Image (cartoon, rainbow, N blue to C red):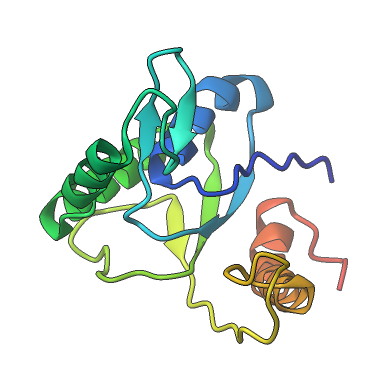
Length: 168
């Protein structure tokens, strides 16, 4: 099964939508498996044209960056931007008859009030058992557990979508 890893550390649903909008027509995915990160994560656009997921652009002071983050993490704005991104992603998925399996790390609200026919949010239980070298991110054992859990929960949908019922 051909696959692509389009993840970018520190990114969120802004990045997810933008990548899918630009790369989806070329890749024509049938299934997307997403480890959906903290919903407060937003892209920032630097003056040099670079997209910076949740990172401070060089030309912005720490104080100014902190004020941006305070605005972008306001709960009503987070909900609005997240719903907008998932609704936009869902429209692209419908166009390609694609299914997205979304495994949330930290959802603070549910999506039952908007129709997302091509996005399935799956419960994702994981244990943080070790740290990465930076001491703030999950370590290799935790990441392996997360990947195994995601695969186990995704496999039935993959088999169904790709008509692989004869494979266990």
